[in-house]
Image (cartoon, rainbow, N blue to C red; front, side, top):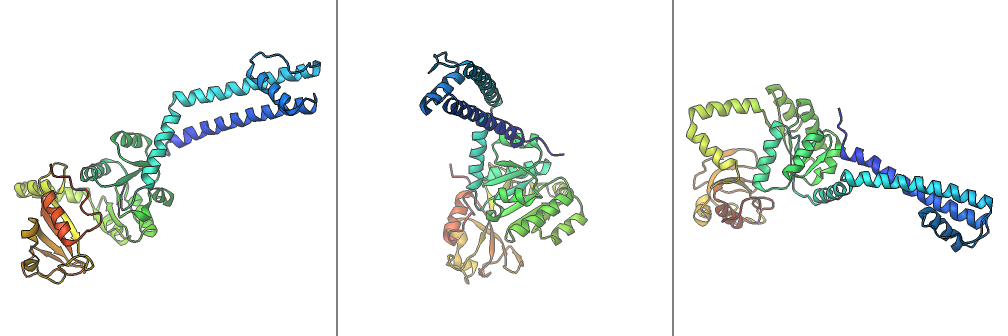
Length: 355
């Protein structure tokens, strides 16, 4: 069931305020035309008489009025009091319920969303989505959350994350978070069907986007992969493997966890895409490039452009166009490696500054 959102609640109040103002303008126009056409006063006298009548300031009549004019003036006063009272009531409700403050905040949030580029999208803020958002925040990358639960949206806002209230399976919601400019979408919705539908929509709107999906079982993993998901993670399958690894190789797991998650890490893992236009070491071996001696960072693996993974590359392993170098080091070492390999966009700004 769809929640009663801020836009729904205060959209009605906005319409009522506008309606009240239009009604007041109509009353002013009607009064001015009456005095001008019926009483044969000048336009300035007619407008002045209408305003002082509606404002009930108690000024004397501009000109003498007969019984008919006085009866109309009484009716004009009553219509003005009712209309102004209605506007004041709506305005007071808007102030009490924080409509104007909320409206300003919503405008600021929309401006923040409009400025996003090369960002990440998180669909769903459940048990999985909240940890994804926490890690993204720790990495200091730009991301936006889509959630269709109003209570969750309010919680997300309190945490300081950028969020929109909407259904991630709809193209409208994905377009609102600028999916065409996004680099990655993570679907962590409650059902496999919703994740599948979101991946299909995302790939349709932005074929180049990297789609990461959550799945509850092996069958869902296969379906999401066929739908175009670049990576599918099953918390149950992955959790079982990690539990077994923690039992069999606890020190290894502690080390791996320490370099891939958290905000206060000493070492980081990062990937660098090799572009022949900016990298001076294309075609050279790792030994000749001397990346380790120049930066201090360690090249753990190389994924070739055809998907082949070379773990623990040797010194004579060549660096080729389209390779992705998976490296480990401190934040400063990885920054130095980035400068050596060339300015790779949206790779290293998320690393913390050296203290």
